[in-house]
Amino acid sequence: MEKLVEHLKKIGALKTPEIIKAFLKIDRRDFVPKSEQSLAYLDDALSIGYGQTISQPYTVAFMLELLQPKTGQKILDIGSGSGWQSALLANIVGKEGRVYAVEIIPELSRTGQENALKYGFEKEGILKFIEGSAAHGLPKEGPYDRIIAAAAGDKIPAEWTDELSPSGRLVAPVKHSIVLIEKDKGGYLTETEFPGFAFVPLVG
Image 1: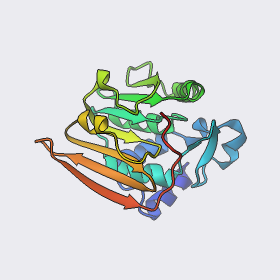
Image 2: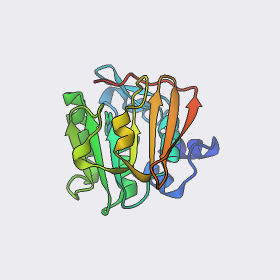
Image 3: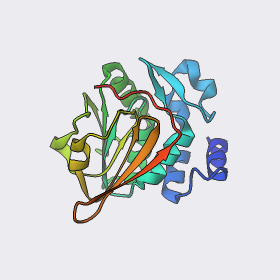
C-alpha cells in the first residue's frame, strides 16, 4: 500500500496530508475479493461482482482531492460498493463526523459493511451502511457537508445539490467526466468539469 501511495503522490494525484494518511491507514487489499487480492495494489479498477468495480486508486484520489473532506463533517457516499472509499472518508472525518454509505445492490452493501468491520468505524458511530437507492438523495440524514458518488449518470440529480450544505462540495461522475459542484454560503452553485474518465453506470 505504501508503494501505491508513493506512486499516487509522484503523479500528483495525492496531495492533502489527511487524505494521504487515510490511504496509508485503509488497506485496499481489505476491500477486494479474494480472487483479486494479488492485484489490490495496482493502479487499476477491479471487479467486485454484480457488474460493479472498486475504482482505480488514481480516480479515488482525484475525486477525494476535489471533495476535500474534513474532520467532523457529514458526508453522503453514493454507491459505496466495496466500502473502500467509505472507510477512507470515515478515517478522515473522525469521531466527530459521520459517513452515510448507500449501496443499492444488497449483496454489495453487506460486503462493503463486512470489509469495513476491521476498522471499527461502525462500532464508533462514524460510518453507517444503508442498503437502498440514493438516486434521489437521502434527505432523512441531510444536509451534508460533502456528497460523493462512484457511478455515472447523465446528470447530477437536483436532490443532491438540494441536500448540500452551504459552503459544501459535491463530486460525481457525469457520463465520461468528473464534476465538482461548489455551493457558496448564499446557495449559489458553481460547476467545474474534468473530462476523460470511465465509470460504471449509476443504478436506480
